[in-house]
Length: 115
Length: 110
Image 1: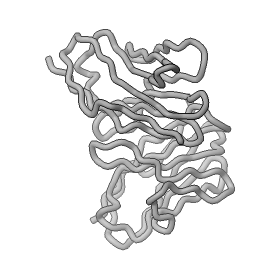
Image 2: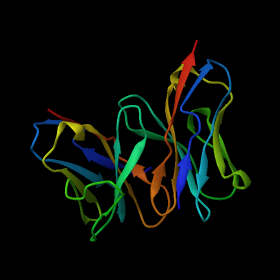
Image 3: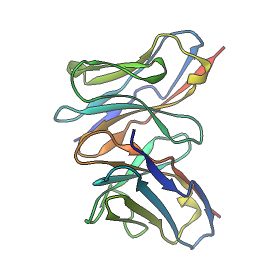
């Protein structure tokens, strides 16, 4: 199947700093990318949907100024957690798909710890 | 509106016993449905998917799922569970967005 690479796999940062997470589709063009957040022992909560070249659509309750999403090319989307706080510590997973509805391919996730 | 529900938060089965994990969805058109498995601290692994056609879908690791339109369900089954199947299982529906159910945690006892 198609490969989605997410980097970094884990990161520790200090409160108040910003962290950028990258999601790349390695062998296909991802017209749509999704970003999820997962708390321990909970499901994946969709944070936002991004389409290449346009602004991301955020789910209700997700702060768009806190979680900046950029989908500047067909193979790369980034999630930047700005002014990180300990409560932002979580597992973040991206997924990408080619074209319309259909199988989305997932990155391996990024474990963010804010200290 | 689009949603997916997994009624069972946690299931415990004995090794060798059969397994069924429930998934119900809500979507206005024909959904694309998926089952994923996640081991602790790991990413997601696709078990199987349904797009159209035969309503009984075979997946990896001996899993299968049956799409029942009349019941809006896509239950996951395995005839004989192995200890290595212990993990978190997520049903997902792809409509306008790709949403996950709340997950079912599977414990396998010897």
